[in-house]
Image 1 (cartoon, rainbow, N blue to C red):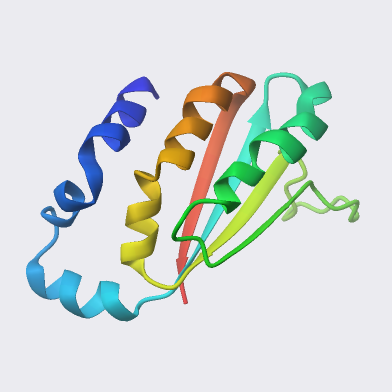
Image 2 (cartoon, rainbow, N blue to C red):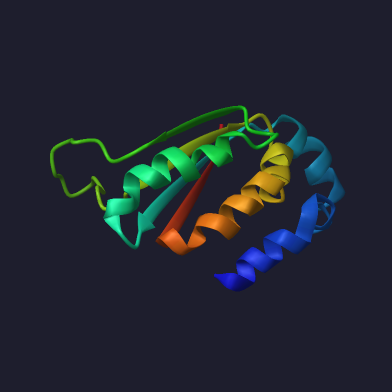
Length: 130
């Protein structure tokens, strides 16, 4: 995971943009809205409240975030298709793919990773085009 963090820190928006064809950037990024869902499994479940109230809100304060929602698994019934195993999740709305890309190198996002990554054992991200 350390190599991914280093990649995100050093890549920057311009570097990442160069990985895509110019026509894709100009057409798709300008108009494609998206949802960025992040799920955290913490080393210690006793840290859930601290992580939810102290750590995760940093992500919602990043410059390009449109809307931000965080929470914990709902107390819904156990079913094969429902995953209650994570401790904290957040859903972040972006107005464009370009905004999501800029978020990856936002100083608050990078500070969040640096400061709190030791608290989670696993993180999963699901990006959805809308």
